[in-house]
Image 1 (cartoon, rainbow, N blue to C red):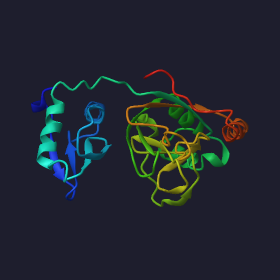
Image 2 (image 1 turned 90 degrees about the horizontal axis):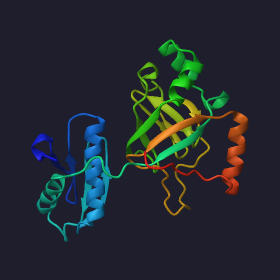
Image 3 (image 1 turned 180 degrees about the vertical axis):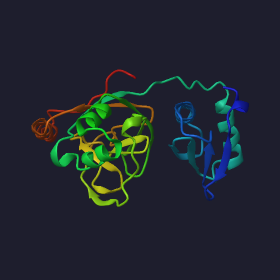
Image 4 (image 1 turned 30 degrees about the horizontal axis):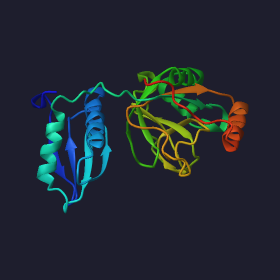
Amino acid sequence: MDTEQVIVRFLPCGDTAFTMELGDGIDRDTNARVIALYKKARDDGISGIVAMSPTFRSLLVQFDPDVVHPKDLEQKFLSLLDGLDCAAAPGRHWRLPLCYDGEFGPDLADVARQTGLSTGEIRRLHAEHDYFIYMMGFLPGYAYMGDLPEPIRVPRRQTPRTRLSRGSVAIAGELTSAYPLESPGGWNLIGRTPVPLFDPAREVPVLLAPGDLVSFEPVSEKDFASLERDIASGAYVAQPESPA
């Protein structure tokens, strides 16, 4: 990769972290660079790095100043950009069951009003698309997924809810996501998945990761209840398909 073609900025975040920006917009190419850089730095085991967090267009790097000087670390990251293969190591493909029916999709009617589509069309458009995970954030296991089909793009709710159920699936703007824990939220709720996206008892607590693809498969309320029982008993465990 020619670093001269990439907008790179280093922004200090206190004394023990900096943000490395790789672009000005939110798009797949910029995000691919961020994820590839994150994986390369992780695999190289760079001395002094405490943690890294990839976002839409930047990488947050936390470091130990007693081990490495931030300017030396910045130069190391710039060197990693040279020859960086942004197409390497594709993510996994997850197919998650999703129930749009009844109480699980309380905002479907409002989304239909805003878009002029029927609730059935909204469900169809949402379910027939594969979603790319740009970044994780807000809650452990919360994935920001794009790109939502244009006909069903609506703004956030004017009044956020104070409590959403775990597994609630929502849309806002160009993105969709699923809430891994009970929490407040201001997006439009259109369904719910029974699959635990965060489980501290698992060897890897967070199910999804940046660069993964997610598809939603519609299920009925009856099937949702059956899946919940199977998950609780261990009879059903979500598994990814081959790399996307």
